[in-house]
Image 1 (cartoon, rainbow, N blue to C red):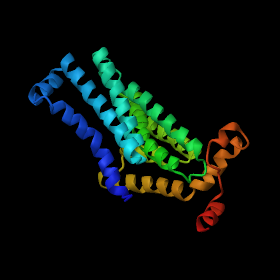
Image 2 (image 1 turned 60 degrees about the horizontal axis):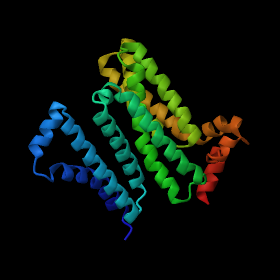
Image 3 (image 1 turned 60 degrees about the vertical axis):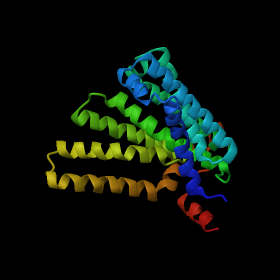
Image 4 (image 1 turned 90 degrees about the vertical axis):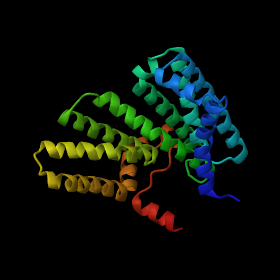
Length: 262
């Protein structure tokens, strides 16, 4: 029985529960969490071993059930294992460079997603589903870490303008690769930035929330309704190039509607 929702829920729960189980197998739960709280080398070693067990369990789950979401779960566990190994080998490095390391991991997951997308530019096989879940994992990692590095301590209008600029760049990338995950992940930050700009323009507090939602809704509506046309316009300079061969064909909105009806 190929039941999608139970398979997704089981895939999401399996690895974290294996990690918890490994941490509690020896009956030293209290000492384990004490090590974590004090940041000792023993705590880092235990975390590395537990995450490694979680990665092995995820790979076994993937080989047995072949659920597309397990590719994203495997990527997440692999990134966590790499970070825990680095933290064990070089204590303090991960905490000091978390945003940069998360960005690198997010870009690696994004590259893996694009590799699956390139195998199925027509979006008709399971490779598309595998890529979808990988994009869904990569997007928040890239968006959050990029904003953390760019905005940092920038307050007020400067930080808000940086957020808007980054979301615009992400929207262009999302249009090129024809994946909305990057754009969706940035909408919450865009909403905060719009609210900050409206507040800086002395908009009344009662109208601030409503104005932010209206502007954000208009942006989403325009991008959603004009996605195919915008993508066709944006992809025009790349037509006939090597890059276009690895991306879905850009079709005008009318053509897309006819294709969907058929």
